Length: 93
Image (cartoon, rainbow, N blue to C red; front, side, top):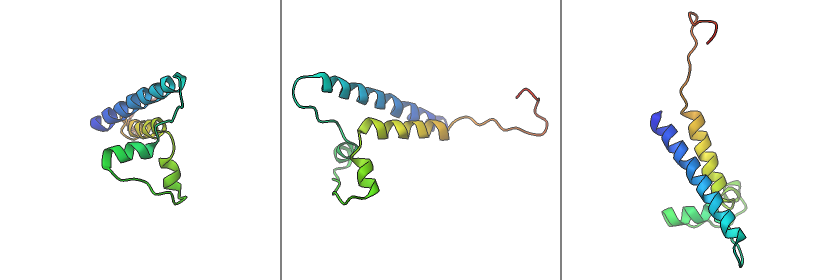
């Protein structure tokens, strides 16, 4: 659980850095082309996405910071510390 939360926070931090880098690139001179999730997948694995109109292909064409951020938030939420309530728990908890 600890490592899941750690990776979630790291993914969220990476998403913030990616979004801020895209914002800086958009303010620069010249044409701005955003970093798509499929570009990150191609860099990491070497696999390219073929356009077939599927839902997965639409997700991979979205911005990289969005998919990385959603993954980070999901990991943080799913790996959070759970508070188990029992019949003998105090009323304030």
